[in-house]
Image (cartoon, rainbow, N blue to C red; front, side):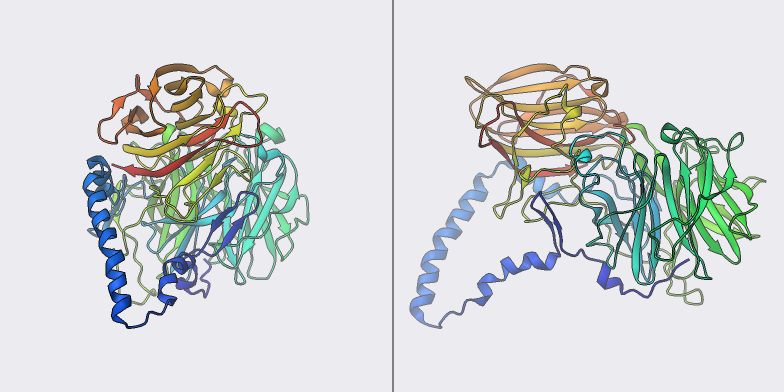
Length: 607
């Protein structure tokens, strides 16, 4: 395994990345502090007159603040106190963790360690920004530090929704001081991006190999300087599947040099074998790969003394007697002390493909993953386990369960920053005026025209959403709607192949509140709208309580205190290869030279 000599401090925070065309900025946290430090540059004279003037100004402001907080709705105060309570925390804070370590749709994970830091990349399909990068110090507590793909090529193609297309299973590696990510777009080929800092900026995507059906690439730079790339084939595009192929690659990692060699054919014993990860350890080449399909598959490992085989095969992880279906497709990673772990996904329907962490050890040069191995070495996934050993070396004192701050991927957003939170994604490459952050504590969505071929909101690109973060959670937002034309609409949506939303629509006699559902939206079905009432104001609170089984209860409030059920519960469903998501949109039906908008004060995820 690679152990790069990289400062952990250097990569624990994000670097500035500009999203061209959407005016969003992803910066270092320190950049924002420049605003707060402005007043410190002003030099005051030590005179009694100035002090008196400051007191004269400050007293009314203090009085106003005390009055304002006294009349702040009780519900808002309560929500603020709940903000730190995350919906799912895998760190049990007793030296153990529970699975999933990431209860969100970070599908097809690949993980590496560089120095003291672990980095995870996941597929993102048509969601933009894509290729999320997560960081951890202990493999249990993870946060999002950026995205490697701020806009998805071909840019004109992905300016429209492309459900299920785009970024499939990626791989991440560290080589000669740089991070490399290889990802497939099964309609165009295999791309590569690279960066010196995993938080970015990342290079423009480079098309390494053009072709339909190429999927799930993973590179290997061998000890003799030669480079290889393993990949699979998507039957929906290539007309063939269940085979793994290794190509020679130039040392720069930018070009494949041959037609490739089949190293494994899974037909029969391992149907739909895909997602390969290629490693070298103690003179053996190893291929870790999932087989059997997303929902009920298993994990296999292949090994050979030669890069092209022949490879021995062993099944290493399966459901067994547990309730964890399809525990497969992921990455082997070592701690600095040389101890092994395996991160993989589990498909949970509307929640997407969540990530689990399994203990792993080696016996007779075969990996043993999970627990309760049977006579053939097939393990089962764990529900809870001791946290990874993060000892500084193999010979150092063991530090099982060493304490790092409890962290989860970002969810709640107060919109107090000039950067858009990394948890947010669009359904397509964003336009220049879709969204603006502000220095005034709100996020503004400008109304965008519905597509010409619009059937329902499955076809609408400017929907801003984030992943479901737990089995049970509550999402609440406060917004103010400022329409310009008849037909302007703002919505709070649970998005998937079927969806539901609460909305405000500007009609001839004012703003109307409605609850809308659309079953089988991906098949072009029409919406079912139920108008609730006409409102006197454009300020409103929307909420969804998500229960077990992704049953969603949507409600609204005009004062932030008393919430009223909007209609019958809605059962969320997955999108195409992604889990259900929750978020907001702002659209219009009349094209003018200006737009109405909605200002979102905050968006909070709680238990």
